[in-house]
Image (tube, rainbow, N blue to C red):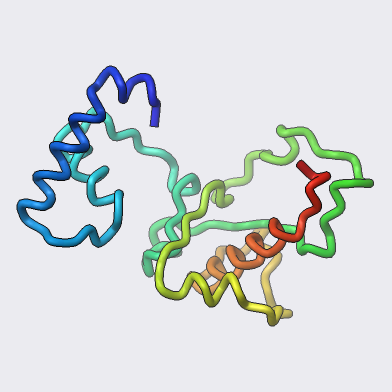
Length: 156
């Protein structure tokens, strides 16, 4: 979201108006703040900016692999060495690969199970060429989460 444009647009008033409209028909926010965003966009479609699905992979949706088939290359934690190995440039790190996951969201009741998972599936795909299933995407998310937590602060 472009914050300057939202301020000029009167975002504060718009989201409050959307909230009032939402709660005229509903008791609970089922998708948290996303419900309010959806109403604001419905009322003001010029705010909507469509991004390629690789930039908005939703692991809570059971249709994610069908709607946006992605690949997700990832080094395993034992392959990470940001202290002694030379750093890649941003161009190298984000080199264009068709259908590569760029931004992944994971909400849902089963998220905790994937974040806490300790057994490694030896049949895990390398994620470079193969399109991942829903379970594989969630497993990869958990792997990335745990790998990020294990990085030493010197990597930042």
